[in-house]
Image (tube, rainbow, N blue to C red; front, side, top):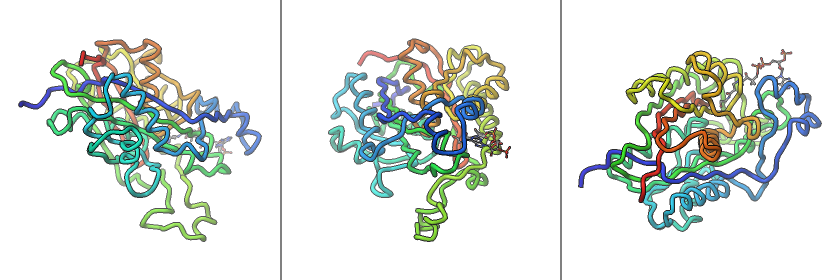
Length: 334
Ligand code: UT7
């Protein structure tokens, strides 16, 4: 049997923790204000996980919805990828827990760590597996409880992030659908621009390091901002060129939701009006790997993307990593 030519997106799902934390609530706890957060980032609230809502819990909920929407039984799935930088445990992979929770028998299961670019990386890798013939039906979940890495006393970072999960089901098809082009990249020299130092093999979490709060994320915001705009623009332009279309053919751009000002700068540099960009970071903040699939989910639910549309996904994150892809939206009959 020859390899399929496309991997269609057959189903989509999302999940966020119950608790909503508003800017005003943060302003009561630290030296910040709703006005500063809104004008500098566009964020007004975020969802924050409780102790019973770890990564596999929201990943499972998003994955279950994606499978139901695709009309597929768990047994049909042969590969599970979870894109996350906040796994349930350092070992084993959260993907195996999600597989178990969903009752998916004997699928291959692994985690993929590319920070906020995780979904675009996962879509690229997942499509490659389907197109090579290694996988026929693949569940990709991007999920992060990024607030686990947040120092709630650090106003430079704690106002920016929220928790969430988004999922898609990819299925082999001959109909032109799913990823038409994609690219992923990393600039390892920038690994220290945004990181968590303690808790890995380089610096195991000792009482001293914990007292210095080195288990939490730090970030050089302004530098990341510049790299994010350049990285997303260059990779987005590459993806559009590789798809053999022009930017004018793109119905909607679904960018990583980190900061409204980053999205506005990308729009300006690409020469596209903001109406062609989907934005929902006001309600979720930066949900790391989950931000693109949650935005894609809401764009589809709101009718901003319909069958046949070309959608440009573009993301940027710690690593530094980036990636973009052009997707032809459409759900071929099973
Ligand atoms: O997913 C990828 C991960 N990260 C990103 O995409 C982040 C990219 N960077 C950004 O989004 C922006 O750089 C930030 C939102 C993080 C910061 O915005 P900025 O306009 O670059 O502000 P800044 O860091 O230059 O800080 C300006 C001022 C500083 O005060 P001084 O030194 O001018 O007196 C900060 O101390 O704003 C202060 N500040 C705050 N004030 C109130 C920083 N955070 C806050 C805060 N509330 N939460």
